[in-house]
Length: 189
Image (cartoon, rainbow, N blue to C red; front, side, top):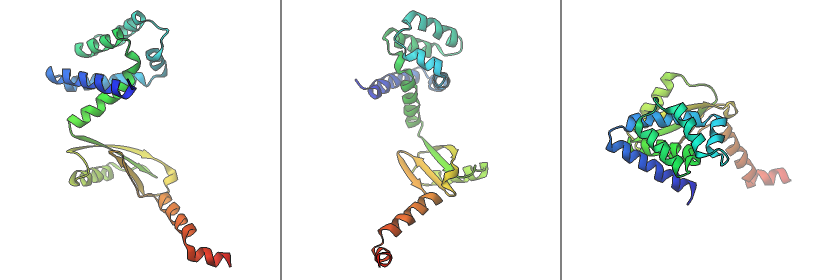
């Protein structure tokens, strides 16, 4: 079975249980916290390691998460340890967040600009996206800065990309000049 299918199934199971027990937002906090922990290289390697046995991993999980995470989350982690699926936890937590956003109708939009955006500009973009039919009822905006864009912006969401950057337009213009037969003939003379 592929990693994506395993992650999807376990994430769906956790979401379904959380919804049944009216703990979806609480479990979301746990998953977000866990995702931060898995971004630490040592912890990530521990999860993936076949050398560290289940008992040792269980002790580490208890030391790190007991009293901080909900009982449902702790039970879920314990099941994954017993089934030797803890290596999939980074993918499961990512898939959980994806499925949560679908349930809550949240669109995540990434905006990359050449210079940092002001809060006012981000809010203006959020309102325009909400007014369009392209996004869900709620919009979560992530911003990034890439000076190589020169100006303009790149907007990414739902596997779509709208590139309105100066560097992209310059590349298009350069390609048009290369493909222009009239100019090619003049240069060849």
